[in-house]
Length: 460
Image (cartoon, rainbow, N blue to C red; front, side, top):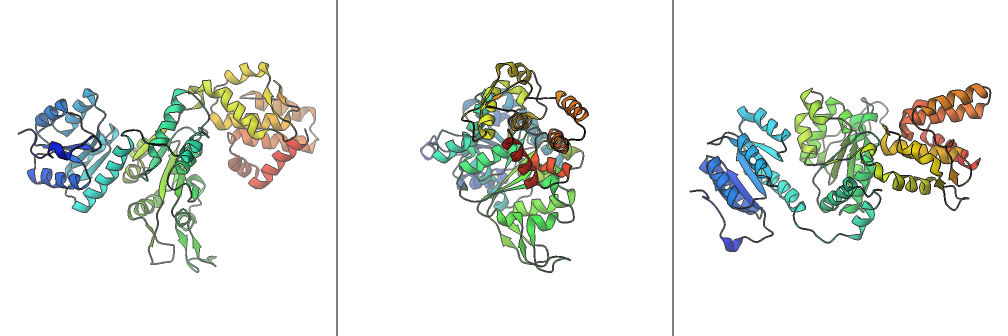
């Protein structure tokens, strides 16, 4: 019989996710079916891949849960057949300890999750409810809150990639599952993370960014999880960590691929248990947070190289968002430039604009530093230029920057202001416009850097 376990038609409506469970173990099929029903899903089961394919041809499913070693052709081949059908269906694989490597291969091919046998009812239900939330997010359109629209309006651009990104954020607005943002340096990963935060139910809670690459190894655990007074030398006061600071809000783990290996296991436990224990304490504290992570690294390659924990990758990668580099959305360049001119415009000037002669230079540049590099170029032009129009000499990009610095220093080697200004501009260039990184390169505080840039504007 093709469909051994199913709900009556009267119990199923168009808003109920349909799940197909494929396993040759009758007990597993029955157990998984009952749990799926408790998660408000309509269920059908199949003991073989042949029966499963027959069901898939005759109807649409939102989710397929399949064992790796199911007869006739196996779970991996079934997944390939499903993809060949062109069905937009989520897939979860069930695997025994001896087939985990096969499940990992399936994950790389786009499977939502894998669940290891034997599993408890509680674990399976928890994982299934999380997956159900993802499925619900991808179903029919809903009314969009004004806060969500306001958040997505901060994403400047009209190209199809940015329009699709806005739609993704709208879909994620009312759910708390983890999001992994992927993209090159300077593509706006934190902007997207803030948009996701501000568009959801946690918008009134804190948004706490963490630069994982900047965490000092000796203090990283204390900074993330907090510490009790006397926990270590210099711990004069009890201090909450960044996880506790993000309670009822969003924790943004920027450059999570740079997180030290020894901290990855502790981070995984916190994400699983939703509890933190401060350094020097034996008390576990409950936390209620949404986690958004970002990286410019290929985490799957890092996993294979042994630099990033595989289980942590799956925990963070429930849903991922890929940001396009600026060179792939050059049609947005005028809008981005306009936004930055408005952002950095001098209060004494009603409006700023770019001279037409500058456009070939801007449109012909490859922008390896992406939007952040463009922002830096416009800010520097506004700081060093004069009047409301940025001319060709005010806008320096790419290899022109270093040549301009050298010629100015040779022409006026004893002018301290010029040397300081050029050093700051060069540091900003090296940091691709990241002011925090630039201030570290210069050995000055970020506040000092902002003050210097503000002074350059006032001298115009």
